[in-house]
Length: 131
Length: 111
Image 1 (cartoon, chains in turn orange, blue):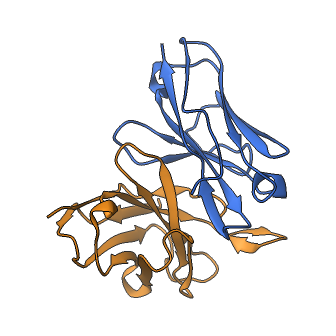
Image 2 (image 1 turned 90 degrees about the vertical axis):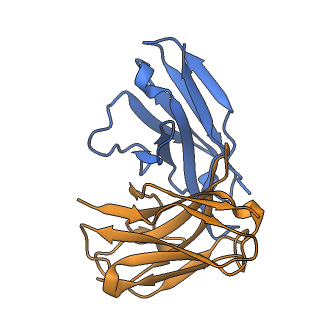
Image 3 (image 1 turned 60 degrees about the vertical axis):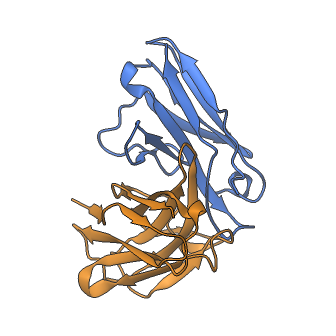
């Protein structure tokens, strides 16, 4: 059974550093042919889902949404089957629930291999940024 | 950021049929990309409902179905039940943004 387990809730001050994690199990995180893409999704209080970016852990192919490029860093450590989302300088507006999700790569003749759907979701990590 | 537009809310009585629209454009749904639907129950993480246009993961009842036409898609819920009260999101790929996009979300209320 594929599972994604995220790190616990965080309370941080503006300007601080934060790195949250998403540990995968039930599949081969590092195998190029059978792994899943990991996506990070933001949900601000009372709002909808926002795509932040994705990573394919076996080769660290990383793609950011234009809205989040330069604001966060996505990474992964295949030795411990974990993906990360990092902020170097938090702002109050980063207060939100953050979800990771896993999607299988599918082929589209226009855009090649990409996770066009996200099948498995973590439980979410609540990040609160307040002075 | 979202370029997939959904109605903010829909409602129906138990047993009724409701539909949720997801209006996109030529750079996403109209470009031929499939639409995925997620259900988010109150206080929980989203979960996959419909993928590859109209496939359901195991455990999702066949009361849920998806369809797509031109630049829009729809999710239909037949035989509405109290447990269907949740937020629903569509998702696709957008060539202009070079990545996935989510719809604005729809809250389904069972009267």
